[in-house]
Length: 231
Image 1: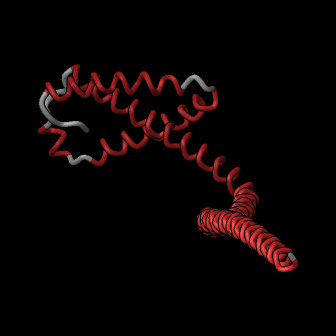
Image 2: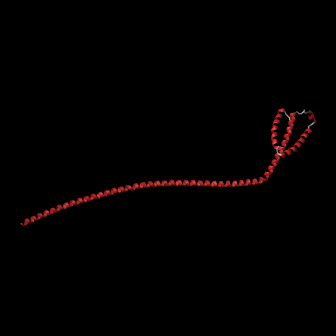
Image 3: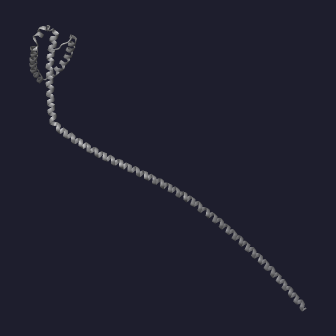
């Protein structure tokens, strides 16, 4: 039985109409209608039982039922029937789903377990491959670093060799100039000596000629003296 002010009962009646519409959608199934007939019998019995169990004092004390209360009682009875039907239907659906899932749950779980194992193996392989790639990249970076160092060393060596060659060419060019200058001086000295020797020879020749002339004059004088003596 529903007790309370008439305003709350009116609100309940409005809500009940919406619930009744939802229940009527389910009643379209013929199987559900057969269940409703059975449930209506049981609910009617329960209602009569509850009314019979009420004490006599309460019956005499109760006021005559108004039409709104009668409507609410009818609505409550229908709501109980609809609730019972909904409960039975949902329980049947749940049992069917449980039967279906229990039949296929083991296979699905096994398949899922195998899929998870395959994924774990693939993940391990990918991690190993990633580790190898990282190691290879580290080796390549180290190799490139060593190559850069070697390249820098070779550049420095080439630079030093070029500098040494430039210095060597300068040193070689300077002795050649000095030797050329020395040879030129030697040549000039030799030429001067030769010229001096020629001058000396000329002087000697002049002296010889003078001596010869003097000797000739002396001879002539002697001849003249001899002739004078003979005379």
